[in-house]
Image (cartoon, rainbow, N blue to C red; front, side, top):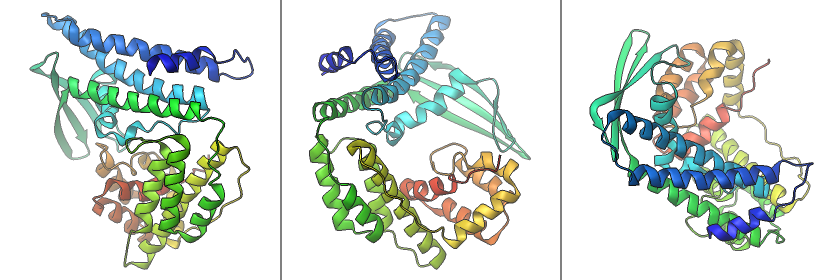
Length: 353
């Protein structure tokens, strides 16, 4: 499989008008180097602490670079990142937090809510198999200590699993590149009707067209799952119900955009009016933009270490009825997909500057 992809990369044209070929070659080479570094990490045994820590730093940074290279490989080969969605992997999504804590900014992290953090490796708790570290977080009138353990083999295995699946999906796409799904009109109908049966038909056709299996993390399939969840999401509160319908239509719009790109067809304009509570939220944001806007960064990700504290800080700035409704709702939601559906729309706010 790796050799087949290498052949595709080798045959890329040297087109000076586009950076895609160079991007794909660079990413492919870097993925090979990352594999060599991961193998070396587990194969070479060190006794001294300095060499071990150097290897741990290199291991975490190599995985971080490898994930970036997967996105760039997809963009270089297809012009889009639709085949890569590493954030759906819980283990790898945590990697960016771990890497920032240990390799990026261990001695001083500044958070948007005014807090500061300092991370330290627990004495005697680092080896070629795992590492444990503590992060000391200071916020206004509060002090927390968070302990996290990292299993290196699990991280490496999850990276290899995602990489292999992405390469498989890319190869199938490249081999079927001349085919088109012809589904954009059907997705337009889903946008208008939110028909779950039609959505299932579209997903099945998309999978057949591009040769995707049930393990694929393709972004179209991910957004189709989000749309399905939104369609079947029931809320009694009329404001929340209107927001969920809006969220569903925004996911249908994303599906339409993806198909328009892949099938190279002209987009029709899709429009849905803002629900009243979202308009109220945006008005409150406008009044406290400088302080509140940075706090929107993590409201779509329930697993982010700052998810809860950022929302609590937002509540302190945005004390309107609509803002309280939406932010309390976010904090109460347990399903991470539901959080994403709501939080990603709050993040769509654009500042004046």
